[in-house]
Image 1 (cartoon, rainbow, N blue to C red):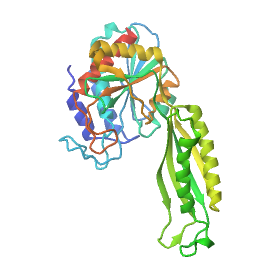
Image 2: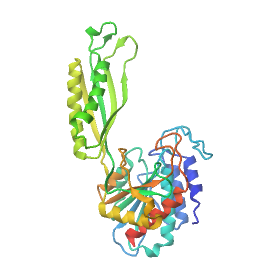
Image 3: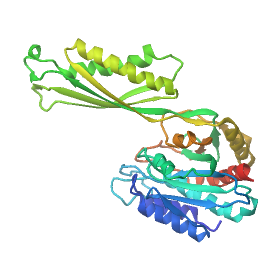
Image 4: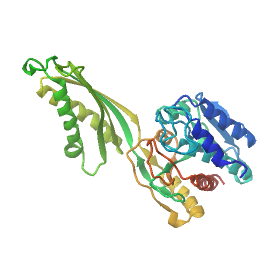
Length: 372
């Protein structure tokens, strides 16, 4: 390969950019693609799209990488750590971007083998949850028949990949619950309606949706991640506010949880002489892999990595906006072993850089299998 994958990845890692701010990152991607004789174009301001034509005008295969970083202060200790305070590539999007650039080089060298064209999608704002939606609205899937993406997976050693037909990642929703009571002096609770006590009961009550309302064989997570109330030790406040997330694989269950949450919070709050207002927003659908496409991709991975190194992907309840592409065209999203030891979004997150050539080899083989 002419491209120095480690150098590209380390450069991107040192200069991470959060969602919607990926201007330098997009510039690096464009310049790299231009050195390969390709003609990238901007989309959704900081996204980059580039087509590698095939022999026919049939609808193309899309390959997607996300490019944004996270608002986390890096603690990895690597010599090429982030130079941007409070921002780091803690989910490996620099790895995904570099792998797709490497695939671009391989496909250009083997362009005569491409019956159908390949569209390279370098997507911004995956962590911001709006990137895929904006790219789709801008027409990134026009004349695209299917899409493939990968994500590094720290729980798998380098050299391994994992695939799963059907649900792989969860649907996600966000909720905000405001408990309104009656404020007063902390020494006279009988003259008040305490929203903190009511809110604490609501937090506990929400967990009963998982253990006593939802079907026990349906995976479901309800997490309260923020609880804000009060301004002083001796004052009962007027309101308490909590925010959190719901994760599951079933879109029907996701809708039901919103109704159950409204009923549960309202009834519990009323028992404490308070009121509850619930705002429930459905965000991402589940990542659900197309059976035929996934089987083809898996076989291509077996051909280059070996049967023993390709397994069944573990489901996770994290969400991914790759799911939005899959609502338009058939898609396959798979895990690529990156060696750990820290998981995504950890300030000490690192990868074994052998994932770069392995990823290029695997994704190139998949692309050639699907378009040749």
